[in-house]
Length: 324
Image (tube, rainbow, N blue to C red; front, side, top):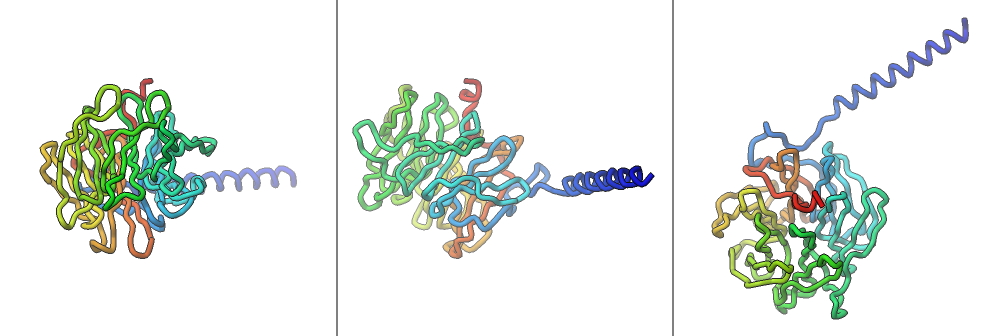
């Protein structure tokens, strides 16, 4: 009888534990915006992210956040939980994912592109020099074309000296130069049809629109948009209506620019301009209308916001690559 009572108590304890655990899980609520949230209103997801830069979001809604100073990548869950995801040895500024969920990082300080297996956390150098032996300057932002080439800005050391480059990892795995002679090449994003690469030149405050040939090389370069005296473009992304979204670092805003190069919409981010800097963004969510936006401030307390957007964004991994 004593053994029976002990067993019964143990089963009751286990049952209560499971009920409590299930209840706690049910009460756990995502902090990400929903379709019911107002459009264009930032919602804080997480803070304490250092020099927050270059976000990427996976299929489960987890966000990988770069830090251009720290030597690791942070992971933020949809519940706002922050953890160190992987040690990478140097600061990084931009990121993207491939169709298998691997993370590609612009390691600014160590002058290379790193591929991280998000399951094993194994890190490999994907690019560090061009075929002529020239070491990368310091990659900043990164994006896919629809054929499987990976394009990235490479600005370190540029500014008054217009020596910044845009490079790409070709289908044969070789790193090649795409375009040169920029003041400070920063954000990169493809047009909806992948025929043009947009490039934000942080130093000249100009957005360039560069033709992309079938073999991945650069065609003609076109002036697209001028940020103005108070504007500086950091990260950029394209939405499904072919509008360009710009993280305006100095005004602490997101700008939406039409395919014709006209500013048509502005989202003001929390914080005072000049003290809070909007650095980058990416699109995600079930309908691709959630923007994940990084921001840093003078206290080095990086933040991550989500915003319900007026239009869906283009996916980080082009649909053509998902089926390969």
